[in-house]
Length: 213
Ligand code: ATP
Image (cartoon, rainbow, N blue to C red):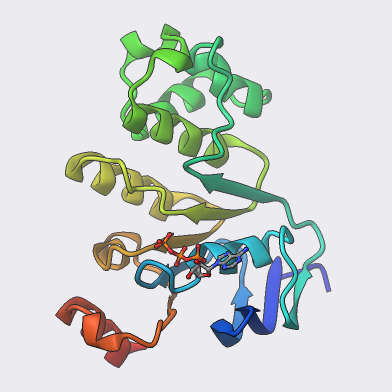
């Protein structure tokens, strides 16, 4: 078909040595759908994203990229910004066909004021760099965004605003986090919990989500 489902994963399992990270994870990422993957430190969230991105192979199961899949990937430590270029140029570069007003609005939804558009990306704060990288992904030609803890270094107001912008984004989002609050903000169609065998450590928020899942 023409790919109602840009990305599908079936029966994914992954171990490192004798350490079983997860087993039997199924996932169908429909066009424009939002998925949140929750789990504690070490539960395998980054590993799952790397499998979905084809950066690593599962032990069992398979990842099937649909026709027309264009992946965008965000990981804090793999920064993709051009530090010499301005905020505006960084976004423009990824969306050469977008109108100027459209881009200004997009950058506004990621909390960039008019005065900041000419600032070199290298001089932005950590949280501002994160916001710019996410604005770039949203404006790019990607149609499935794999986001690894994209709100980690954002203050509470920025976090709420960025999650709001991602909720309105037309493409699909797979957002990995250990923040259960992201579920309320993104209103995902699906929440995947990666248990890590230490459920005693789960907070009440997690327990509630487990019951919902
Ligand atoms: P965090 O919330 O801390 O980012 P995470 O859920 O993203 O955690 P992963 O980075 O996916 O967790 O790691 C899952 C587990 O697999 C961890 O215990 C990690 O130490 C282990 N692991 C990951 N990669 C390897 C590897 N190449 N070799 C051995 N162990 C690994």
